[in-house]
Image 1: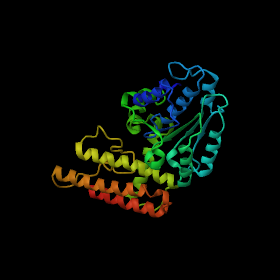
Image 2: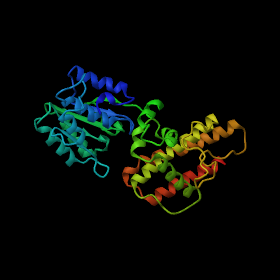
Image 3: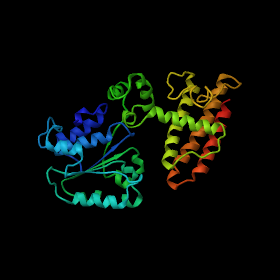
Image 4: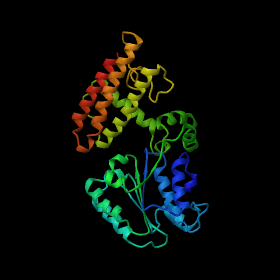
Length: 333
């Protein structure tokens, strides 16, 4: 694959191709946007284009030894830095600095791709800032971040930022066609919300079923704590945000056509659980009541999600969230 083959990111590609065309490649580029929309793949192909000895229309040829080595992760001048146990630590940044200090062996530039760059801890970010202030000659640092606000302002201000956006439905369908069963494609498209990379790397339907199962346990008063770790709590809360989104959409529109979850008779919840009941009062009063409860639950869950880095107690978190969701469902009835 070459940079030109990235689907649905014309604005971002225009910026990247412009730097290649003018031979004005920055020392540091921040590729930001939601997970699963092509940032990492674009970073790899940009690295290929920078070092390709026989470029085609300002892009990599995607055939030479340099391009093949970059694709397989064995190019001596291209390194990738990934979080370890959900975090990028100062030792990893020091290894990055050491790699950048060497002269290019085969290509024109030494390239380091930092995936999930927003996972840098404070010490790593401070050490990395020194590298950005005086970037080594003939080097290129590509930061890939789904949450660029998680990076210190001092780092972001020293980067050329290229923003990526969720794909429109038709372009998302192009990416997923052939990789997802035709019968499940429409449901996967809804759940991916323009992020086809998520659908290709994860079983979104299984995640939806898992979320609903645990939600059923909460609503039914199951006292057992079933989250395995912090990542499971985060994944469940991410699904809960989509669930609340469905409730708000339905309260406003009264239509189920745009719902991601909708009613699910196969789940352990009542058929109407994702949307809530139809209690007394006028339609306007019901909508206002539903919306107020949904937004209150959303704020509480979002606040909890922001505290996960503090290693919250799983049992206490489970009971707290269960109380919120039971109150939400009871309020809707």
